Length: 170
Image (cartoon, rainbow, N blue to C red):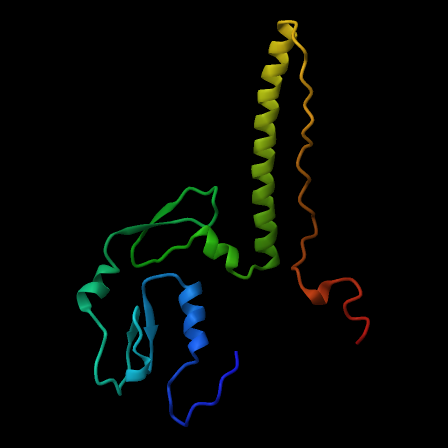
């Protein structure tokens, strides 16, 4: 992110920074510290010693802390109920977060378990149809679906610097 250097002592943040925060942190509570009148934004609580006015509505602010909210990291996960002061997350937010190699491996294992369960369920349903066809002299169906591939044992973080021959020119 590039922007011109603000005058000495200015507390203005780059507009792009607000856009990033508002799009990535989709919660209801955002706090601007060391703000001035020019920093006041809708949806933000702005605090600063040089403010002449405020957009702070105490009743609205306290309402953010009452009740509960559902949160879940993955689509196939049962949602947990959290107190409303915790914003929780959604699968969409989780898909955008940077992940460590361990998190990537765990996600791949979770996806593999889900695929194996689906494969096993389809296989059981096929066996019922197969046994019914055999018992009644009907044409015997053929199960053509392949089992899911195993998760690789060595899981590495994806990075252009880890690609084969990435550092040859250096």
